[in-house]
Amino acid sequence: MKSGLLKSALAVAVLFGVAAGYVWLQERNGAEDASYRLAKLERGALTAVVAASGTLNAVTTVQVGSQISGQVKEIYADFNSAVKQDQVIARIDPATFELRVNQARADLDAAHSAVAVARSGLAAQHAERQRQARVLSERGAVQQSDPVVRKPSPERNRPPLALDTDDSHRLSSMVCEPRPYHNRPARAPTRPP
Image (tube, rainbow, N blue to C red; front, side, top):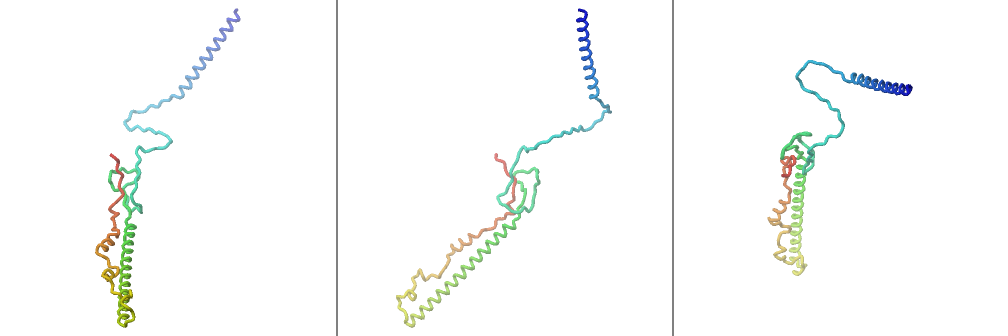
């Protein structure tokens, strides 16, 4: 019985020693981690540094575009600039559009010239035909029932390709008038109410 009691006491002492050693090691390691630095009290800004990685997303994203395309002449807003409704943010170079308008006007002038040339050619043919008919009828070479010599009806007596004033107004209204694109700048989009 003595030997059983001795073995139990020895086991309890060993367990107590192991527990005391464990606690002593934990306190020793904890004392090294906690180091303090003392300094004089000062006023100033607190600085906190945060290191992170990821993707930033804007709270509100707005797509900006224009009704026409072309080279940008002037920019009044930069990336991430705050803009207000109807604020001019860019101007598109109007030179290309002005060139197109001038080209259309030149084409229209060329078409008017072609019509004038065709009218004069037709009038010349008409006059030549009447002169030939008069010469032939004077010689008696053709009969009055011949379509070349026959007296023209009032409808056919009208000068060829005569345009009414309404027709010329209609033609001139077909000219595309230049719209001042430089006065129609790209604007910041409006939000629906």
